[in-house]
Length: 126
Image 1 (cartoon, helix red, strand yellow):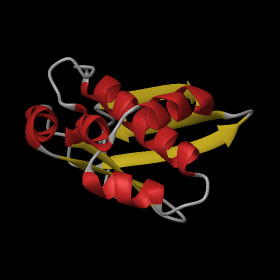
Image 2 (tube, helix red, strand yellow):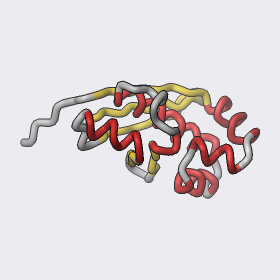
Image 3 (cartoon, one colour):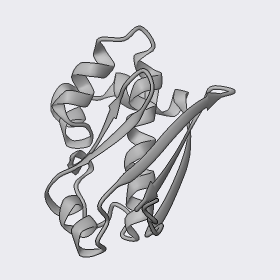
Image 4 (cartoon, helix red, strand yellow):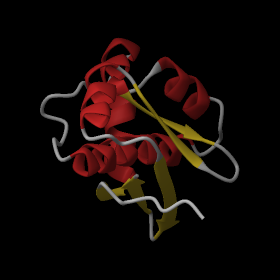
């Protein structure tokens, strides 16, 4: 069995209503600063789109924590959450990818849950 070391852990909890206000208030140009085009397309295609935007937002926060940088030196749309029926897959671009490479992070494990109108996202950097 291959032994993988945990190189970072990130956790974020966010109320869905907070993201709902943000998403409903901003235009597409502003949303493109926070979310990738794939995230926006996916979120807009589902009935409970506020929940999906909250998952994407919390994933970005959790990944920033796991990288040890926060989102200070990384653009929001350089971290992408791909939400499938069974998984939460993380894709990194630009400065986020560089930070992961610098820390020798080769794999991400991520999951999310919804309870009491909050989204919790947990990520492990391996």
